Image 1 (cartoon, helix red, strand yellow):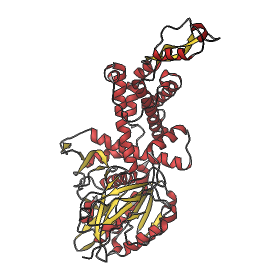
Image 2: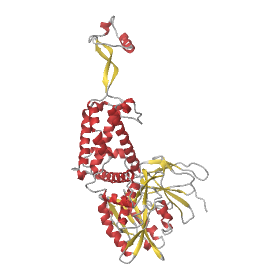
Image 3: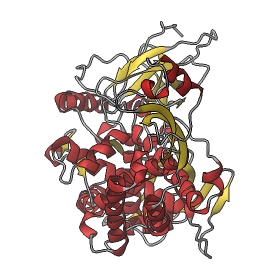
Image 4: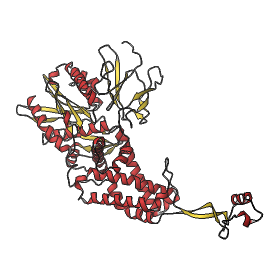
Length: 540
């Protein structure tokens, strides 16, 4: 096998290989790193401090071996990050790579909190943020509640949450209903901490601090060594002459000060809670008459009032990690706010981490959408009896464990029965009925219809939360060229899901492929795509 020099390629689309001559995009969005196959360690990205998610490995036509990894989003259009990996000689090879363009979650939250009616790019990101947060809420609900019954078992085992596909799909289909504004963390906080937070804002804990100020000579009650040194430097023969015409000397004054650690925590809690309130009310903007939404909206208005008028505003901003003091741990009111602050920090860290991998989270949501579509094609199947393996925390943007396997579904068409199988994760490309030519294409998931003595029908899916308009058409042409090179390509029906880009919807790949815009509510997208999917199944 010929050896290759150590080099790498950052591809603007999942299907770009190291040997492709492709129009270099002016802005990266969903990007992938292609490295030599001879790696002996995980590929670590400095941006996230975690191993990059492995996509696949393959051998090209020249015998060179390659591995593909997905890169996170950056926080600016020009973001770069260091990536480390080891080769077979044991050397560490740090390289600097460009990351997909983006905006930091904290920056976006701040901008949207200040805008009542966002427009343009900010409006797009507001919709994407709501879409991603709804998926996070859906997965957290699945993780938090076990509902085993006589038809399926649910529980936790080996660090994984095992949940029924049947219940997950039913819950997903109801996740956007009007009567289901989620009982999110901010709703609980609005109900539980509004009273103690108001009491603390009205009368915050203060400390007496000693400061030195010029005072009338008759009012001085305390002086220290620094004051005496100052007095000694003043001109005059006695104390009255040194006091000058205004008869003022430097003395020690004790003043109440609200700038304490516990009040800094309260100030930061209010700031984070206000942004989370804005996020929640924007998601359920259409349901403003719902009790939970009204509770959160009222809580936000009260926070804004406290931030303007309470002495808490004089506390300084927090810097770095907070080590709780005695007051935060043992004073009842402050302890309740400290617990709320910890819960809010944990949730926002989860959202910040997932935001960097929002393309993968979007792909997982699209996978759930297709799972729901397949679930509705039959009343009973092995798919209904399958289990979802979930991680309690999203790993590189995904909650569904990479080794989750789904059972087949038997679909009764007009001609005959066909078996459908949902395949996701790196193991999907190892299926014998999926052509090896898909290995370098970075497909998010497949739906396949295997059958004996008949070529397998393959439906590959790619998902993009954002698209580079300048290079999308050349990128699509490159994908069509690669699909045409597959054996029996006439049995391949590709789909590309794009978030809120109805202007891109069209057919491609000889009319067998389709670009679909995914928006909210997702059920509307599913209803539109179902007709196309059913007609496709009838045709095969």
